[in-house]
Length: 54
Image: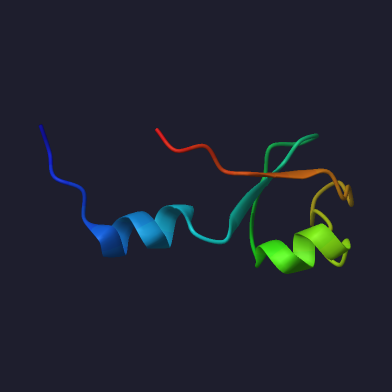
């Protein structure tokens, strides 16, 4: 079983959100998502969720 590198895991999962409509990734802080300041670049939707950890 492979060991997890904390730097790589933080780069891939921290501050990454996924659009619920078109599934594109957006790198931003959670406070900006909660306050509604961020929208998707492709479909202009404000429906975002955190990226899933596998």
